[in-house]
Amino acid sequence: MKAVGIKKSLPIDHSDSFLEFNTEEPTPRDSDLLVRIKAVSVNPVDFKVRQNAAKDKELEQPKILGWDAAGIVERVGNKVTKFKQGDEVFYAGEIDRPGCNAEFQLVNENIAGHKPKNISFEEAAALPLTALTAWECVFERLKIKENSGENQDILIIGGAGGVGSIGIQLLKKLTKFNVIATASRNETEEWCRNMGADVIVNHKSLEEEMRSKGYEQVDYILNFSDTDMHWNAMAELIKPQGDICSIVETKNPVDLNKLKNKSVAFHWELMFTRAKFQTPDMHKQHEILERISKLLEEETIESTLNKTFTGLRAQTFKEVHELQESGKSIGKNVISF
Image 1 (tube, one colour):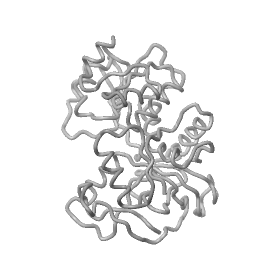
Image 2: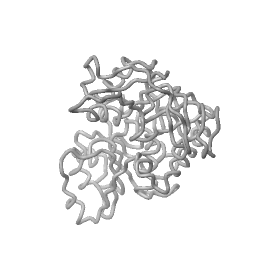
Image 3: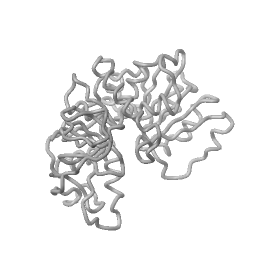
């Protein structure tokens, strides 16, 4: 099969930052699905792995990146019960297995879902990683209940990104929270409003912006952008006994003591945790994706696809990674094969 991968961690403008190559088509075993990939999307995790996986060495075999895909089940392992050959699926995959930037990929059935019938492969590929992340943040880490949140406020830092885009929708459609989202450009403000945000604030002067809009403190904060940059602001803006959840690792130590006097809880979220550690509740990601699929089919929520690129080619992935690294990406960027 054809694939695109890396052998060294190189700047995106380097001629060999991505390589096209041929490799053996994998064989499904046990609970694996072999999926023929139709479309993939690119997330910050893709360029972070590209930048760090082979920093001071050259890999013997190219590493295939990619953790967001939609495609058709080609074959199944002998323990598969949830899917059959020919099923259309979408999923985010596992960080420690070969990715989806290839013609075929293996994925465990417990972390895959049936693709919504009413949207394209491209629209579906935009969703799994971000929808799982947002769902786990809101309903599992913060333990927010559906239909709750009346007269409560939640701040989303990074509203126009992939996770923010679906997070706003889930909160507005499944809860009663007042959703405040950060955005700093006209186009990102408009995007957040279209996703359903009630209030938009500029993250570049977050505390001042919040107070100018009448918010001294909020009940919950979701940080989908920069934990280091916003740590002090989050500590000030969160209510006593509130909860903060972040998906972005820190580059420097942060002062947890700032949260102590208010008895604030801080949560990390990594969508890959369940698959990486083969947790007993790993199958819940299948259940979440099935729920997301139903919400899409009912048109309760919509795909966050913004730009579509074409071709399983090194040059295509260079273009999309360059856009992701710029920090100016809105919604999701998808590559159709």
